[in-house]
Length: 112
Length: 110
Image (cartoon, rainbow over all chains, first blue to last red; front, side, top):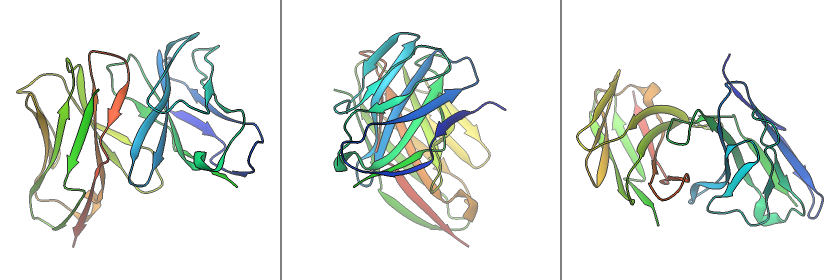
């Protein structure tokens, strides 16, 4: 089954404790992306990747890092999480940048 | 900067009462306009892609249309299972960033 898998689905942690949210897709897609979704603000793009070792900033990249060492994986790293990064996060992938994106089921992150 | 505005923010319909959702956009060189459906607690689910003005796509009770400034999602004779938040997104010619609107929350009452 074609899918985008995120882990963990839920995480409660504390300020400053580094964390990684993993994302994996099994569709051999070139393009992958991370979004955060907040009430009243909608979905906002954090980072995206056009291919292995090619990443670029979205609209809200501050406080986040990504890497794309393999085509299927695109982890999101919060080096020093802060409460304003409490949000619902989605990973997505598509064949190319102008193709429809397939979304994961989301990761709800709470930073105390 | 690419921008997307969706209206209304929320819409309540009776079952069978047709209506339309609006997505207005400003973008330099539209490369694609996307409609998604999102159910509570789930990731967005792809519905349609439109690439050029005049294009239309249909799927069951939904029909998406595109002009040079806006897109409409027409819902014909909706059912309660059509209740969801509908998201519009655009991809402009300036970058590979996808910009989403804030969505329209549709509620269809039986």
